Image (cartoon, rainbow, N blue to C red; front, side, top):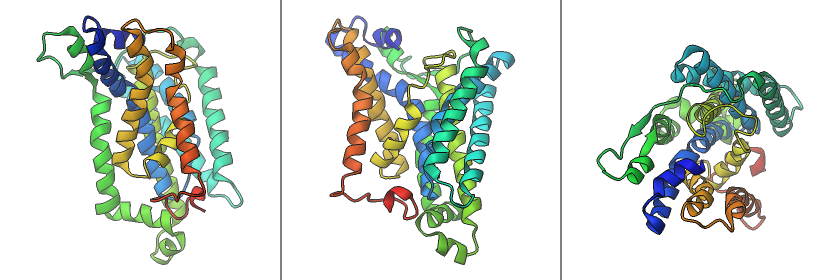
Length: 314
């Protein structure tokens, strides 16, 4: 991370700091964006999925291994999405049983996914795999710093397009309205002839598949490669991000960029020689997550926009 952000500000001095933060925000926010949109879809159906951290890590491994064997990073992305969907199916099926708690199942799926990924991923540590392509949006400039900052991965562009499409899905399509109805009042959904169990399983599968894509970004583009500390808890932080975004896909996009920018502050300052608070600045995303949860859980504030069937709204 440091090398890429330093390249974005090299030779520009302090003027390069905001440029490096912008470059870092785009890169770091991509997995946050996909996991947050996936959790937004799941929670809109009335279910919390804390297992997305496991789907993120499993997606990272599956995407990297598939890309390494096949030589195609996009095949790796597809496999990562499929693995995430399988974990989502497992989560949805277990949560459909009577007297089963969403939170407990999510934690179990998270630990299961991380454990399996760590076990199966040992042969792939330090292997060099294929990388997803980047769009050279800064090719118009002669500055290497600007070209580096505006080298945007294709998955980020897909995520930016996906956010408004998901908003349209919720507001303008029949199935989007069904997801919202199940999330707000499952009795009304049953009266309308829809199965809340089926809708929630499909929503959980879709959300977990997006988390798998976010994991593929980590291993196939940034930071690239497979290692056991690849995710750094981004799947869990994305749950707080969705609450902060009030279950709105566009706000999820903006919040992901905010989280990404906060994670880029430390490396950006280090690139201009400020090293005294490096580890402190690297902790900003985690502090931001804690503050969001404290503010969101305050009894003096309502969770405006929360689906009625979601456990945090009760």
